[in-house]
Amino acid sequence: MCSHSAPKDRSVPDFQQSALIIVDVQNDFLPGGALAVPDGNEVIAPVNILSGMGFAAVIATQDWHPADHCSFTTQDGPWPVHCIAASTGADFPSALHLRPVSHIIHKGMAQDRDSYSAFFDNDHETSTGLDHLLHGLKVSHVVVCGLALDFCVAATARDAMRCGFRTDIALEACRGITSDQAPLLHDLQTQGVGLIKNI
View (cartoon, rainbow, N blue to C red):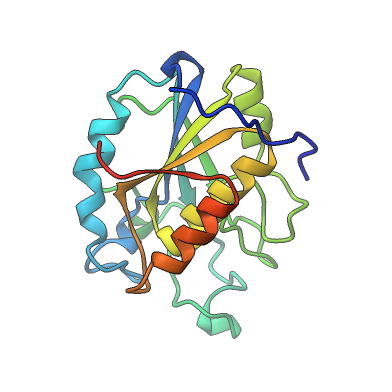
């Protein structure tokens, strides 16, 4: 797990030291997909706006599961089969602008554990390498967006804070599974995560 302490300076970020993390905007999480997030397609336009804002790095994540992944209901897990590696469901939608994306992080690749966060598997020990990548790029601030707000986006934001990055969530570019996100957002704010309400 990261040993860095979260920074307290909340000044306006310098985009040259900031990264955009686009979490799991994949076909299976969009309307008609195997695990569709309600109105998930509505994040695409604001994500495209964000990715063109001049971030030092734009990182997109993909769930990239083996066919027998432990999270699937076929393996007594909580979720329907989704985002099998190299499948159409795991692909990015054609409307998502990929030209600004500088790095892609695959997660959830181990059969025996899931990975909500873009930084770590759910064991909080196995790293995806994102922490080291961002520190190597001299990034000090991240903006997180994508799907789903109450699972992978929130987990990514919490781990970003733990890894020492000033962290904001762009709410306009997120959608969640549950209807009431207020308790989650309050909890994230108490942990130091900033909320960007308008792009």
